[in-house]
Structures are given as structure tokens and as C-alpha cells.
Amino acid sequence: MSRTTEQSANSCPRSNTICCIYNSGPHYRWPIFKALADNFDIDFCFGANTVYTKSIKTFDYDKLPGFTRLLKNRRLFGKFYWQSGALRQVFKPYRQYILLGEAYCASSWVILLFARLLRKRTICWTHGWYGRESGAKRLISSWFYGMFDEILTYNDYARRLLIAGGLKADKIGVIGNSLDSARHKAMRPSLCKTDIYRAHFNNSLPTLLYCGRIQKIKQLNLLIDAAALLKSEDIDVNIALVGKDSEDVGLDKMVEQTGIVERVWFYGPCYDENKLGELFYNAAACVSPGNVGLTSVHALSFGCPVITHDDFTQQMPEFECIKPGVTGDFFHQGDAADLAKVIKRWLAHSEEQRAATARAAFAEIDARWNVDYQITVFKSVLG
Image 1 (cartoon, helix red, strand yellow):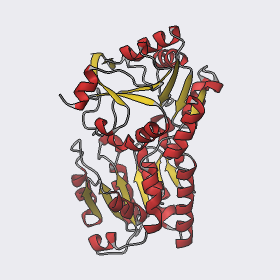
Image 2 (image 1 turned 90 degrees about the horizontal axis):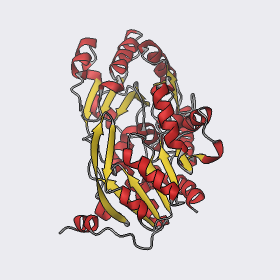
Image 3 (image 1 turned 90 degrees about the vertical axis):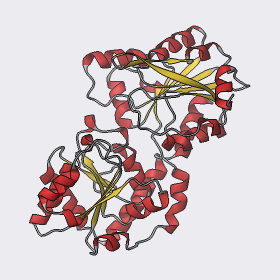
């Protein structure tokens, strides 16, 4: 019997007083979960599978101190699902529970009800609202959030929406989000200008970088169109697309039609942080025409400004680390001409301005978008 199976069958909390119940443990969230394990007496329960997205790789749960139980996420109806094995945790001698703030998780509703009856504290770790929720969804999720003792949202934008929706301001904090912030910070002294783009493109033109899964929702056609518009103004740029085409988007055909084949590098997926750091640091900007999530944190961690669209109701929480004109910019959603205009403005920056942007990017990440900040927030909530 494997350690994971054995723990799942004979799960019993040690002397730990906190239980974290999550839908899954994405590999990129290892640093924050490991930091939680290092700083608190905490047990973890993770889903063995994800309900909506099958392609997200999880970290090795057995390597996480405090991993206690493997849960099974079972689809119920619509977007609702149940985490088998989660409910029994509320009857164990934990005093506090950290739950994923997802109202579609039916078992979390029941856990919240019993936690209230048993006088146990519950902490909601959530994206919160985006501003595009329907009336019914807002009503249901406001009931759900209202059952928690504390709510931790990823950004101030979501916090403001929840307060405007009637939730108490004093129970909502902002925890931000992070990647491997300690490693990225340690890499900064070694970041330098290289010929990574010159060697591939055989030119010294500025390079625009996209890093992430290539999906239709990312609207990368707008980046291709913007590059073509810039070319019509005799402003040539290179484009490097780093990521896997998981939806057969067909960008190669778009590139052929716009006549910039020699200026586009389909780099493919990359998981080497040293190489990614080099790609980000040497790019003129990271452009994500659709929504931008942790890519913005990743880019700023390596001093690269980020450009994305301005409809925050359609954005992911991490858009908030972009400070217009300082760490990046926003363009009018769906408007390739405006995207070209914004890119053109950033291409005109001097080396001194680029260096100032990198410093501002590092400062933004160090202020809130890092593991240490998140742990500080958890300490203020968990005691």
C-alpha cells in the first residue's frame, strides 16, 4: 500500500489545528503550500483530480509535510461537484479550516454549516467576484462567502466588489498570489542582456513575448494583427510565443496571412525557469491580449512590462500588479489598433526607462505578489 493510499484510508490528524481543503494542488502553487506547511501546524486534503480542467499538472502530494488525505472530486450537476472525503474532516479536532472559495463545491457548504455549529473558524481563499457575475450567481456566492469567518481575496478589486455586494469589509483581506518568488528573486542578479532573440531572428528588432498556454481566450490574433499594423507604419517587431497550443488555435495560418512569418517564433512549451527568465528579461514587453493571470506576475518577476486588455470584468486577479505606464499598460479590449498604439509607446522607451521599469516591476512583486507576503497575511488571520 502506498503512503498516499495508506494515509487516505487511515487519515487521522496529528496535533495539527488547521486543515486546508483544496480542489487540487497545481504544480505552480507548490511554493505557497510548502510555505504554509513550514509555518503552521496544518494538514492538507487535495483532490485527486480536477473537475473542469484536466490538463493542469499537480505537484507530488506525498512530498508536502502535512498531506493527510486524497479527495475525489465528483461532478454532481452543471458546475456543482462534491469532494468525497472532505466532510469528515469537520468532525476531527481541527480548530480552523482553509477552504477554496468556490460556491460550486457542494461539500464546502455542508462543511461550513457544521463548522458554525461546532464553533470552528473558517477561512475562504478565493478569487472573489470578477464583476461579470449574474444576479443569481452573485446572490448564491454572497450567501456562501457570508458563511465564512474570514475571506482572503487575490486582489483589491475583488475585495471592493464584495464589499459593494454587502459583505462586511472587516472580514475581507487581500492575499495576492505568487509563483516561486524566492527563486525568482534570487535569479535577479544574474539577469542580463543576451542574444537569445538576435540568434533566432537574425536581427536586433525588439521582441514581444507571450508566455502561457495558447488558447482562443488569449486572443493572440490581436497580437498578430497589431504587429501587422506596426509593420504598415515601418515599425518591425519580433514575436516569441512560448507555450503549448492546447486548442489548435491556428496561429500559424494567421501569421502566414499577415506576411510576418519570419518575425514569429513558435517557441513551444518551456518549464526551465532560467530560460524563461532570459526570455522575459530580453523582451521589450510581455503581451497577453486576452486575460492575463499569473503570467503578469511571472513577467514582472523578471523585470518585463506587461500589456493586456482593460476590461477588468474579463480579467484574472493578477491584472492588478500592472500599473499603467509603470509596470505595463492596458489597451481597449478587442482593439488591435489600440494594442499597436500601446506597444508603439513602449517600444519608444530608452534604456534608462527600461531599467526603471524593471526596478518598478521588482518592487511591485516584492510588495505583495510573493510567498512571504501571503504567509504574513495568513499569520494575521490564523494566529
